[in-house]
Length: 159
Image (cartoon, rainbow, N blue to C red; front, side, top):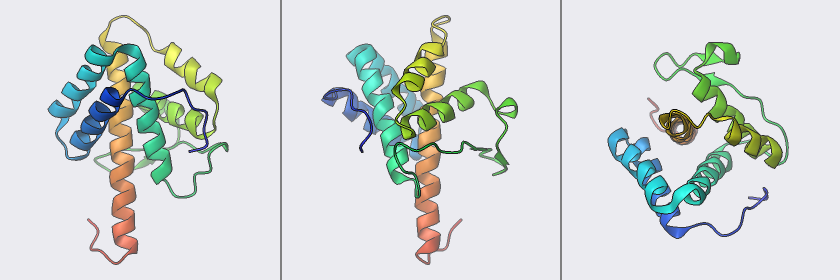
C-alpha cells in the first residue's frame, strides 16, 4: 500500500492479528477474541496498533475501486438482513467508528485516523476492546463479501 507507514511491524502481533482475522472469518469468535487479547497482553499498545493497521490495509487492499489517498463513501450492512445503511445515526457507535477508521486509512489521513483512535474512551477498559473487535469483525465481513462477490463473478454458485 502507498499509505503512510508507521515503521516495521511486530512479527508476533502480526501473527496474532492473522490468527484473529482468520478465526473471525471462520466464525470462531472465541478464538478471535483470545487472539486480540493476546495481542494486547503480549505486545502492548504498539502491537495493537500494528494489528489495527494490518487489518485496515488488508480490507482496503481487497476492495475493488478503492484508491488509496482518495476519500471513500462509508456504508454499513446489517449482517442478518443485508440491508445497507448510510446514516451513522442508525448504526452501532462502534461500527460507525470502525467505518470511519477504515475511511481515514483509505484517504491516507493520519490526523483523522489518530483522532479516531484517541476518541475511544479509556474507561471502562472494555470499551477499547469493543472498538477493536468491531473493526476486526468489519474487516472479516468485508473480506468474506469480497470473496463471495468474486466467486459469483467467476461463475460460482454464490450463497
